[in-house]
Amino acid sequence: MAVGGVKGGGKRGGVGGTGGAKGASGAGKSFRVEGNEGVGKTESLVGASRAAGSASVDPVTTSLQQIAKDLASGAISSKSEATKQAVQTILQKKGMLGKNGKSNKKLVEQIADTLEEDPRLAAALERTWSRAGK
Image (cartoon, rainbow, N blue to C red):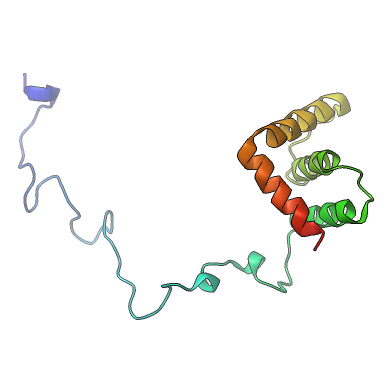
């Protein structure tokens, strides 16, 4: 029996061995950025859906923006209610809600409660709702 339970021969390490990037496969290779392309330019990393004035905004984002506006205007009474509406909107648009209204409501409430109880997620929600007022 071989040490470590590996049978078979072959070179290990070194040139042509089992380690390191080889050939034209591209696995494990790093690529170099030439000039100033990409370095410090966040606008090149932002997709079309995030671009300012983008013509194609997805329906989930549109719905969530409306919820945020409604919260800022007072149409939605609390941040908790806005969070529940946001969760429900996302689940509906993604087709993840079933036919049973009671179980859907319970699922939405559980997810919203989880979002509000987690300090990191609660802070993100707070930032989102505070931006809606601006």
